[in-house]
Length: 317
Image 1 (tube, rainbow, N blue to C red):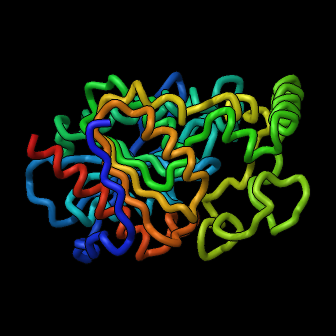
Image 2: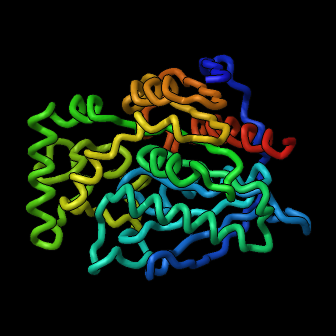
């Protein structure tokens, strides 16, 4: 790694965002025969020229109105255009092949992100020479894959990235036996054409992907009307055999990461950075949980400042 700056919250600058009006517009684009629904965020007072732009993607099972919308608005307040969208099989977007929905497919989501970059580059409001990617939580790995060797993309930012490999996945999902058991569930669900369970439920609930309370189950946070709150068990195999923490060597774009030791699997970030050959800056915030990164205003603003400054550095190149 050419450069790696590790700092704590005390070293982070205060938010530079000025409260600004943001304009939004519903957009659609196609990928692999499906129509994807998105939202374009623009600074209301933006002048006439094209803007540097950020494609923003969120956590697993999420829809664009959740954490992607928070960060897209932050980017627009800092002078960027920003695009959010629902992946195929989620939210308002069309289905995956064979009318399948709610499958956490790294392959499909990576393809959708690439299509989003191609789409946003055609918009008159967008400076096609300065398009960036911002991946949050699970979509961090998909975003890395979508920007690697992609001539449309300038820089990459990751916030609270979930980057696992085989070892980390086993530590999270009950060891080798636990992972094998979930893959068996995946095979059984695939044979039936899918098997849906609730994505989020109260702490301790059975038959739920995330029986943990918090963000996804609180109506004033992630449990918004637009949230599908579904998980297809057919997706376990693709998710568990996808190992983005071991895939850093292919990234050829300058990278900024914001994470915390109090958030999800920080060891995945360290593994990823250790394998990175290119340019990276990492900022570690103290005491910030994974869900804090999704919607706590102070933490979202600090993370947005970091990635916005990183993207602005690309304008000088």
